[in-house]
Every structure is written in structure tokens, then in C-alpha cells.
Image 1 (cartoon, one colour):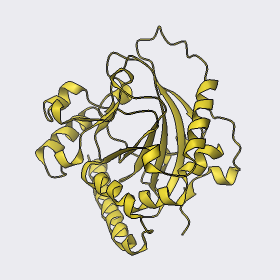
Image 2 (cartoon, helix red, strand yellow; image 1 turned 120 degrees about the vertical axis):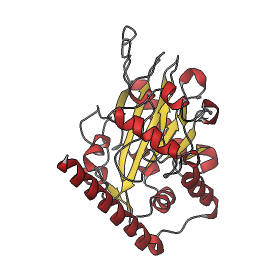
Image 3 (cartoon, one colour; image 1 turned 90 degrees about the horizontal axis):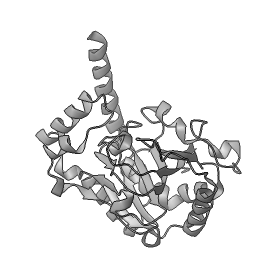
Length: 286
């Protein structure tokens, strides 16, 4: 009990320090293009901003898609049809220049730093295949991520996303402000699950399903998400979904041990062509 109290006190102090650093860093935030302000405003309000590669207009997008589809073509058939629960297949592609260059371009890093509010780090990118499932388990359960107090993950959908491929779904932050009863009820159930996730039936009792937001879209759909502060999940699907996951946090993050999977040997790696120095955590240069 005493250990738990000490941990809570330390966490509250750490959060206070983080918010102070955000306030101090305000004057040092990088310039933001006017077209990108809507991204920040929407993330602050709802925790999610959805667009497309074409509308976002970042450099290296054609190269990114070409490389992603090539890597997909190299993945072997998982032969998992007999399994009741088909866990995702993840390949780390952080070291490949087509992914690295897209993820670390100045405009994108400026958007993310303006949202997180302190100097940031790019941890890496996963190429992920999510397989058909008729019930909720793993990240199909509603959950929040734990790498940092405030973070951004960018999902780039490699194929058309519709109901049969299980679109990303979330509860807008505007519906669950920090001091609302709904917020505390949701996170109490998460706590009871040991933060492993909660199912649709629990969430429906607190937030009506009509208020949940889904993110279907064409191949090349891009979704910015604060996965720490936005309750979210993947939905059940009848067809495989392929997505790129990019991860950005403050530098350093609150839980660095949860970020190493984006560049270490946790998952199989695609062939690396970027130098060892470049493939480590990348801090935005000033």
C-alpha cells in the first residue's frame, strides 16, 4: 500500500514537471504552417485527426507507399487459419530510408512537436498486418497506450479500410473531459482490467455506440492519434488489414522501455540500409 502511494505521488509530481516543461517550451515551438493548424486543433479537441496522404501533401509519400507494398509482398503466409485468435504480424521497418525519410521530415516533426509541446523523438515504424477475428482480444479491446503522457502515433492504411477490414475506432476526447464522470468510469474499468482493455459491452454502458467515431477510408488514409489520452481500438474484421504505425513521444518519454520495440529485435526486421546512428531515436534538430 505504501509503495502504491509513493508511486502515485511520484507520478503526480512527474506530470506537474512535464506540464511545466510544456509551458516553458511554448516560445521555442517550431513554426507551424497555417494549413497544419487544423491538425493541432482537432487533436486537442478529439485526440484524432484523419486525412489522406494526398491531402496531407508531405514529401516522400509515393516512395513510402511503394516501399510498404513491396515489404508486404515479401511477408510469408502466416498459416494461422486454424487459430481462434490470430495475433498481428509485425515487421520493424524503421531502418529503411523510404520510411525513415517520410517520418522525419521537418514539416511533420513540427506538427507533432506543436501538439506534444516539448522536444520530441521519433522511435520508429512498424508494418503491421491484423488478421480476421470475430471477437475482441488484444488491441481489439478498448485501451490507451502507455509510452508517454502525451504522444502521437500515425497510422497509414495501405489498403481501403471499410467494415470488413476493421477500421480504427475511438471515443472523442471532447466527450470524456478529465474531470467528467464518464472519464473516471471508463478508466476505472481499464484499471480493473489491469489496463489490458475493455470490451464493447462495457463501453456502451458509459458512452453510447452512436457517439463512437470510426475511420474508414481509401488506401493512403492517414490517422494522427494521441493514443495515450484517447480511448481507442481496432474493430473486428473479416479480412486482413495492413497498416504502418509510426511512433513519436517527448524526448525522453515517460516509459522508454515501451518504445524500444520500434527499433530493437522484438519483431522481425526488414533489411536495414540506414546507418546504426540514424536508426536510433531521432531528435528533431533545432
